[in-house]
Image (cartoon, rainbow, N blue to C red; front, side, top):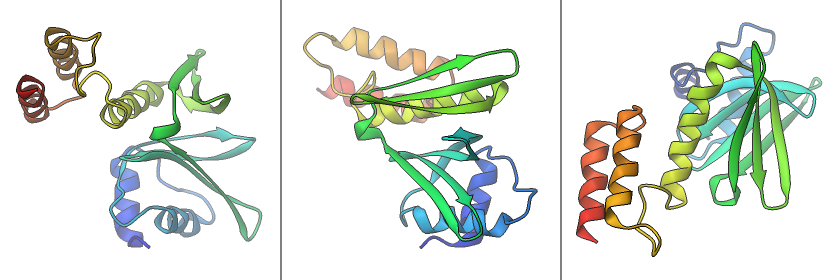
Length: 176
């Protein structure tokens, strides 16, 4: 189990709004109990999943929704990147929804603050690209090296990749 204080700091630095509510420590403990020792939170938002208001975080390996239910229960839903086919958004004036498609099923996290939805989606897409061999993975038969480098540069220009990550991935593509 991960350290409580460490997980709490990760949640706040990843953009998850502070828990200014009853049962704060129980909610942070739920994350600590459900994260692997080497799994870290990259981004997070607050939203509704199956009528429960909770937190959705992106780690290096998966999306994780956590919320307490009743006095002693909890809801923990995990969406491994290896099973996610597509992540999309739907927005209205103030809020938006994150739609997670995996296989034949689709799940929606509703009511996410609109200003937080796009940065969260960007972080998730970045993780999916690394995990599923997307734009910065190994060039496939229908993608030549130039196309891969263009996509890589676009990720750097959008701020998704740092200059160091860009150079490392560029070198990896050119070596192949």
